[in-house]
Length: 101
Image 1: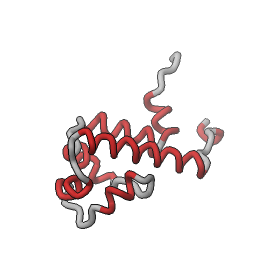
Image 2: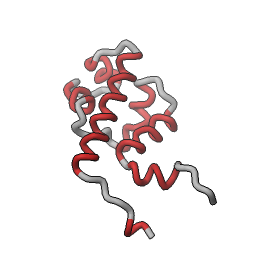
Image 3: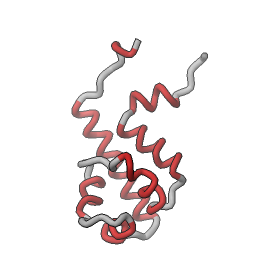
């Protein structure tokens, strides 16, 4: 059934990561946080990790999703659902897109 599911091309994956980075940056800026301040809230050693994410490189570790949601003032379920839509669009579609059944 899923064997025929379309694979994400490298270009599409890159675009998804860039869009996610834009979303994260927007959240951070809406809260009036600098990259360094967000890194401090998350107890990150390097604020450059925030920059990498905002520029479409890297991923937030799964075990830190709730911390990120809290640091950015977003309800964790909504935060993770949005991350999933960028990181795993096929899985997101299977789980959340409305269907006729």
